[in-house]
Length: 173
Image (tube, rainbow, N blue to C red; front, side, top):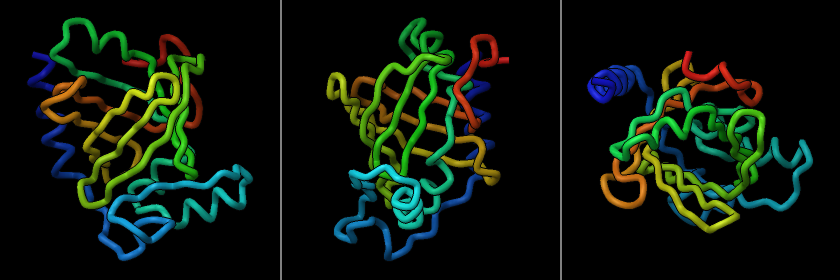
């Protein structure tokens, strides 16, 4: 039943989603159809310059904390293990993630504008994830859909934008 409700939520959100405009300035390096932020400095001015070169979708994603509000998976019980998980993306192509107030790790991200897909590579174990993204018109809800093959096998997640990491008990209310 949860899957049916989640499917209708995604279908409803799809009709309310806006597409990123396809522009010629897709990457800071201007050399491919994939947008990869790749700077080594982390000062605020440099991050702001990097943010200006990001595609519209990622401009609305970076610098916020994104909580998993809902997670659907065919793997029994796996969705429950994602409760309280959060991601925070930086304009320089890095991200942090954790559960509730705890930082679990970091990694690198890149965004493919044409495929509307974010690619994550985790630093600790080199795990790679691929998620097709959809964004609400208000830019405060994002849906991630994993491909039908691979380790995530069609998993889906609803992420909600917040200013800080979640406290235990705040997620899933």
